[in-house]
Length: 535
Image (spheres, rainbow, N blue to C red):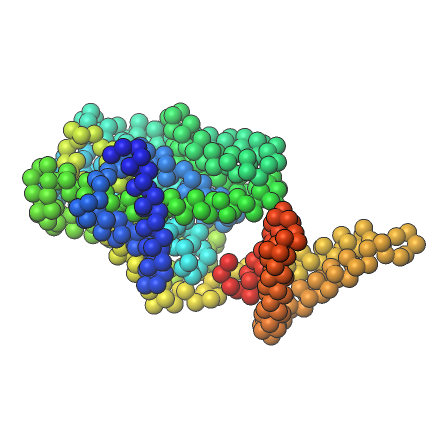
């Protein structure tokens, strides 16, 4: 296919993504599942041009910006507080799954060498950051569960890829040294983290001097790829480098970026992340034809895949069940054996939370790219590839589609399922308004006791009193607030109508239209958010 043809295919896929997103919303399906099914449907159409993901391109194109986006909005305080459990999942669960899948693969396919079996285990062991974010989006889960799952997905790709490299090297060389493997793992992890921290502070230094929002946003996008590519070329973990870089930039962006840059960047990143996430899953579905073609080259095509079905089913079951087998003991055993853990966490997590965490182990583009990256002469390559594809399909389509009903059935999706120790939004708003009023009072008072800015004082005084009153009686005043902002929305609509009338009559210039329209847009977004509408 020519470059122009590939570009046209990408444009067609973007159009398909819009349709599939609307279908997913209508049918209340996870978008990731709809995209994978849509990609499979396209792959089965004979006229669809053949497409095979290049593993190196897939990792470097999709992974850095998506990981950066997740890390950017990760709450560092919560991530650090739950780091022990996150590492238990991201390192312990990945290693345990690699071991279990390797043993099961060797039992069901005895001809497959042990190193190749463990390579398969390493490929399918890490739940995918992209898949986790796509499926968890919109689900109402206890905050700590979301922190653990998203934190795990940020780190576990690195541990899975390291184990994958070690297994492939052992298979090709016939030697394996556990001590060297542990040192290699530590070097990759520590080096990647340090590189990411350095990249984060360097990027912030540059962004602080790029006052133009467009240039700053481009710089933030380039930072995601640079932190991954440079770290990978340096021989350390590109994934952990991007994670560390995103955490540093996300923590510091509130004081470094201007309000305009932050507002524009949020919109640009939202579009970029949506396009990349959607393309990842639709390309996974489209790669079905290439997977079947590989088997067909060995003879049989789909029939060959069916012959391998029992072995693939055993591996899929091992992937799913090993997560349950790790999470429950990993949570409860330290509490029984270590008194310090019981003191830190006096109330154990309920079994329902652990069930959801065990079930939320979707695999995605990292697993597929790792399988495609296997050398052509690697033993059992075709079986590993088709099994990886089966694991991705099962976890995204079955686990991803049933996660929301499971959460509701276990009673975890109810508001207030996990009380917060921090201030509510209304209480924080009251504190902020009081501080703003104090600042206005300090600047407004003249030496003779008169007020320099009485209107500002009146405005901020009203805002502070209203915020305080609402935070103290939020439930009873909620209906009044909603009615208040519905009137505000009507006023904004009237102002917008008059603005457009003036523009169409030629009474105002386009620059005036854009300036006043942006002000109305910001007012409308704020009002709609305050009454709970989607923006």
